Amino acid sequence: SVWMSSDEDEDPRFGEVIAAVKRSLEGKAGRTVTIADLSKHRKETDLWIKIGTSVLDITPLVTNKKRHPGGIKILQNLINKMDEDHDVTESFKKFHYPSGNAVKWIRDMYVGEFKDG
Image (cartoon, rainbow, N blue to C red; front, side, top):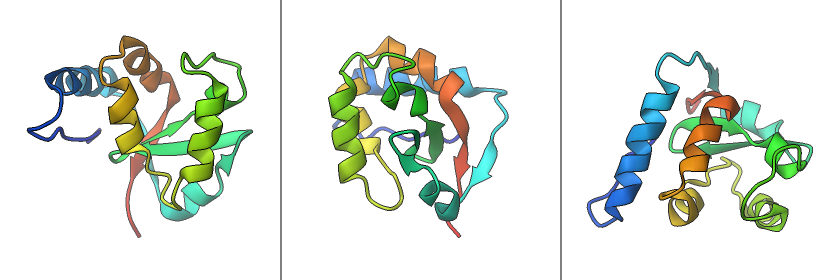
């Protein structure tokens, strides 16, 4: 998984979490996901997001089958603000870089890698 890279001016803890995420996804098989695939998964009952190039199915979080620590309202706001490419990298960086739970859950929610076109 390519996940994402950290910028030099970001909190150093973010890079540590990304390294943990990369380790978590090692050996995890995923599919290639296109913009057309993402467009089919944009409801509160079926939601995929993109962080870097990694695509995650966060449906369990938005349907409350798995409790999101920040609450469901923040996820609902995220859905309303998402562009067509479902990229939430900046929001993830802002709120999750020190979070161990996000890293643990990512492996279970991983769908695959985004490929444009």
